[in-house]
Image (cartoon, rainbow, N blue to C red; front, side, top):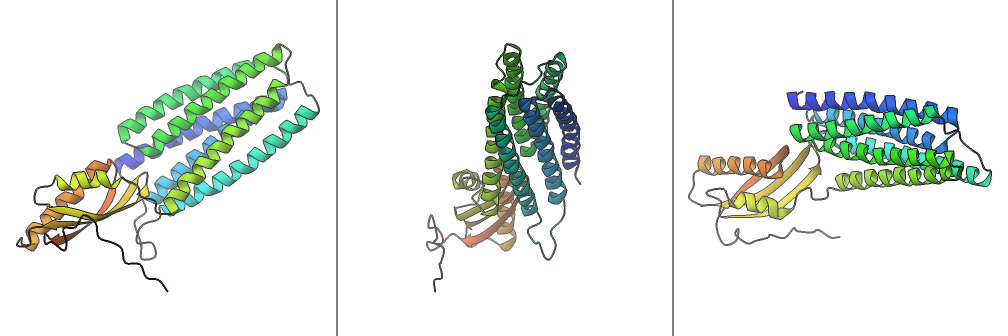
Length: 301
């Protein structure tokens, strides 16, 4: 494991420990006070910890080398694991909505105690601190996983602020706010599940990972390249696969053409801004190869 991967893994472990601490604190207070909003927020924090586990699994899988059965590596397992987490989030949304409906049917007044305010305020401060630290580490390590998780944690801080406002409303004699807030939190969790499913679907369906224009601009800036086409990308955060065709002087030696191809691979990776597996096919710069695009042959039965 590289030093960068190790640093990302250690950061995720710290964030996981903090998210578990926050989740347990909220769940205990939610059960003691009878507040569905606090309990739902605790379950939401528990799902944050699950997301950290997915990130750790992704890092562990990403560092495994390709093998004969998985020549492109094992990164797809990360997307599959994320789909499992999304399914669990969907079930949680249903449970929260069912409980909120029961609370709306039969008025239940939760206890807005000093302990509830103290725990929610403390966990809010932890979330804000974790989000800021994780965002900084994401920039330092150029890690999309850490940057995305930092945004998720920041959104959870907003949910906690809403829960604190709900406790104030309960204190003022409006207990109905508690189940309504729980419904709002269920919406936040549901949206998070949808984004996970969407991102996993993009990865599993080999959606283009980088705009073609970005790669073409970088490639055409390499000395000796006279044209580029058939640019294809797939993958996602952490590793992108790229294959493309370049055209060079037909009279170049194999060694010279190979050197240009190696430079192209390096430049493309720099343009993408994250690790990339770049395959470059070299062609002679002749009219039949210099067309802007070359169609893909489709076989139909």
